[in-house]
Length: 68
Image (cartoon, rainbow, N blue to C red; front, side, top):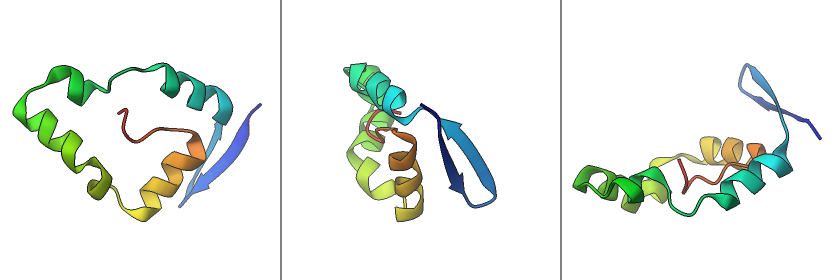
């Protein structure tokens, strides 16, 4: 079922449950899969990199910010 999500001047129509399901099916994010120092540093800082506004958008879209 499509849900309409508005972020600033953009409007998205997204199947939130399906998006969340797909993210749950991903075992490892690309940063962890790569394993280089830059990617591992990014992964370690993920929770502090994204502001509250973006985190709210990602949650509203069903996106797990730990799995870019």
